[in-house]
Length: 296
Image 1 (cartoon, rainbow, N blue to C red):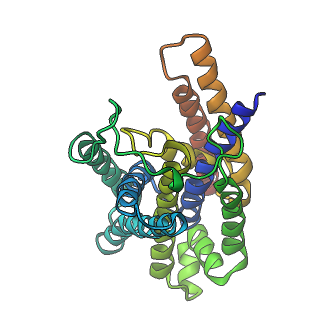
Image 2 (cartoon, rainbow, N blue to C red; image 1 turned 120 degrees about the horizontal axis):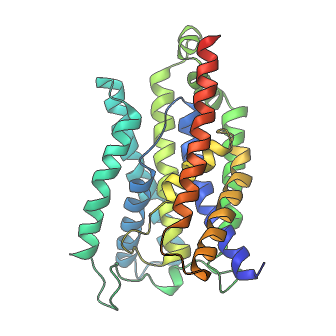
């Protein structure tokens, strides 16, 4: 394995880790966030635009503000789905997917129209300043210094879910809402908090992708990020501590598949096929577990 290959795998895995933690927290609460693609895209777009307006800010302050703002904005998206679930009993899985499906073409239109960059022929926003880009640690790959902070996120999320009162309440609501009700847990509060954190971590993923990997919000950069993060969550059985190896495993498979397709001149998306197979196998095992529980 070359340093470029290793760096590419770890960089991709770091993005899966952040969004995967967002999927995990909501999964522990008993819901699925299928809007990850749109939330990451939405966050990346706003990050690229905000950094154009923060040109005179110190790099640390500019990126920190982007992280906070994008965390809040993407949290509002998932909170809206949570509100629809709470007030109208709308399916969170369905509404999160529909909202994401509406966001993606909207961002596409903004990138190809009003906010398209003036340099080059790439369908993208303007490139961010070099001072706003994370320092690479294994060039020429895009692996950067954010990896050392990102790898701590699943660990902190695991300690939060399994070692704090609020985290245990979130997990208990996912295991049995009836028992949580009799235990006196405020299910509405835990659901909204889990939704907020899920959207927020997807928002952080978008910012990290722009500042550490792409340096611009180009058309469709989000492709497969949200779904693969969800796959990493399911492979890890919604255990934050297992998100790290599952993300690296998934990134290794996808990077290897892409390289194989490139070197052998395959004209179809081989990583997409592998992703579909993984999702199928995971969903089949989930179906079996649910079926066995109902029989009991």
